[in-house]
Image (cartoon, rainbow, N blue to C red):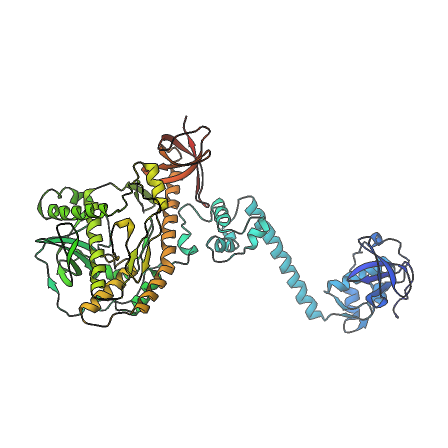
Length: 606
């Protein structure tokens, strides 16, 4: 059948939609389904029926049984008018449009209005199955979305929620589920939904994965301890003093006359620069300490073989320090040693500070502390806690202010200063820890002032040149006492050992490359540790909705205050209706907690 002739009120196809011809001419005037009138060239339209059609609202597609027409025309071609006649027994604007919609659907017929082909049976049957499967999938998806909206998911829904978990873990920025639900595609919103649905519970800590930190132990073999001369210091009582339950004792102290020895696990004896373990430790940067678990920087065997006091005798790299009458370091000796170590908790050591070797050690470190204080070291006494998760139970212990803790801290700082001075004297490329002084140097006298003073502190930096560390009150300093758990401490030990044994040390460029690689990850480590601690602290409060406590107001912005709760070392915002002085103590309870956003609402008790 020839193409229908154009006439006013003919039905035409324009840009895949129906249109009615209003007038003829060099350009045709047509009216679209939207009611808009446009002028087009004849080649821009295809006539479906000569009309007349007076309104496109007449075009309600008819339903039809297509099987007979399709089987009759299989392997042949036809045009729109003939196919319309065959299917509907009449060729009208409405039936022509209905037929064209059938061709557009593409299941039984394909083509243009002038040439239409019946599709092969194999393709039609296959597409029918595909459409059925697609419809079933759409119905299943819609049912799943409805279950999510109703918060009544079934176990099989877990697979569909994997995209939400990927957003919550910062592994993918997009989720079809969140889009469908109209929920922002943020990690916090995804976390919140997973908690609401019960896919995650409160014990899920997403932060290591969000920051792409390893969550498994390092599984690499350690070499044997090399045969070498070591100074035998096993005759000196040596004490590894740490928190109760500490699993990686990497330092100990002892006294030999007027020389204080700080013994440190000799990790560099087993981990050479650029060895497989060294490279992996560099990518990890440090141990990751979270309340529920610790992810070590080194293989567990390193602690088992090198932890001080875990065997009858332990290999150490020991820093022997003598002080002058002004408590300044007068002499430094650094050497590999054998030591015999007794492990003590801080509380056990506290009872031993008034007599015996610990009394002498305490006297020496106290003089060193006094000298640092005179040099402007910061003394910030804000509440701290030790938070741990054991068999699902959250345990919070306050960090007591103990003389034994101060003694160990000062001994370790002494070793760090000694290492730095030794490196400077011997021109060893080194990683020096530095810190510029705060802009305001007032001495804090109360909790609010200490809170403000801490915020004014400038970030410490690791540099290749020695500069003062204002917060510690030291002219030079290097972190050197934790090679089991901090990579740059290990690098410091590698440099010292190489120099002592007459081997090649890393040059400045190699040293700073390691500093850069390490610092690229340690910032994330500290962030994850902070977030993990706050997470479990909020979980503790969720589990104890009856909690009430005291808080001290430490900062104010209009009616918005920051309150510090000493018993759980938590600071949070609170809005108060009346003015309160800083350092005032108020009674509090929890109003609400949003675990996904790590936010807490506090309310003042009347």
